[in-house]
Amino acid sequence: SVTRKPLIAGNWKMNLDHLQAVAFVQKLHWTLKDAAHETDSVEVVVFPPFTDIRTVQTLIDADKIPFALGAQDLSTKDSGAYTGEVSGAFLKKLAADYVIIGHSERREYHAESDEVVAAKVQAALRHDLVPVICVGETLEQREESGPTAVAVAQLRAALEGVSADADVVVAYEPVWAIGTGQVASPEQAQEVCAALRTVISESLGDAAAERTRILYGGSVKSGNIASFMREPDVDGALVGGASLLADEFAAIIRYQK
Ligand code: PEP
Image (cartoon, rainbow, N blue to C red; front, top):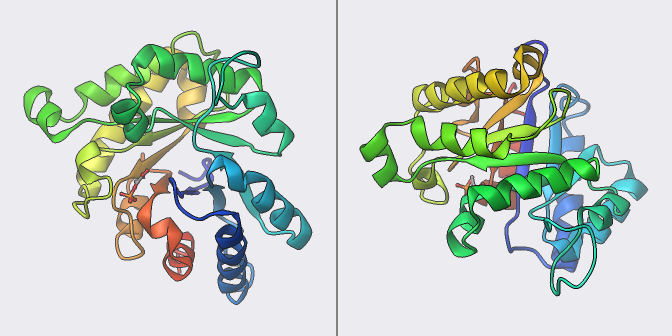
């Protein structure tokens, strides 16, 4: 859509310590800079581990690198006796703008329920962070209940109590396509992303549905990004593995070329 600025998001997961992060961000920046101003029409956001956020922020500031910064998770709470947790307030102080919520790896390995995901969305919004709400079905669920049912139910739950003017991003990430190399087809991505836009419309209204960006995630690479971006309800990508390779991620960002 002409009204939604494409968003290319790199989820580093638990990769790159803070020294490696410096080298990586510099390499990515220089790779893109050679292509002079061709990235203005795309918003780029990187999601490093918590321990890298300050480092990456300093680098972005010092070099005026046009990337936004996000965290991969946050606490449902704002402060207090919650050992090991990180508050949205702390992330905002480090100039983070985005936070990933409900990634399938957290739903699976940390038993994050739809209720926890909804509480984290509220926590993000309290601190003026844009939640990147991840939803998606396993292969078993797709075979059992069809392509859209799980993602639709997860998004409805996550948007409970969210106000119509809230700034959110949605990421459709079929679990069977994450880190597997088994990419969804553009048509499969479009089908679910369209259903998710309907959920946004029902939950937050038509204006929110029109303005909210919906990303596809799952084995996105430079060779397939353009085919997803051609779909009317796909407004960007959440990229895992390929976001750790500077040349590859730069090529994804420059998918229009
Ligand atoms: C992800 O973790 O959000 C993801 C999409 O991973 P990958 O690109 O490696 O499939």
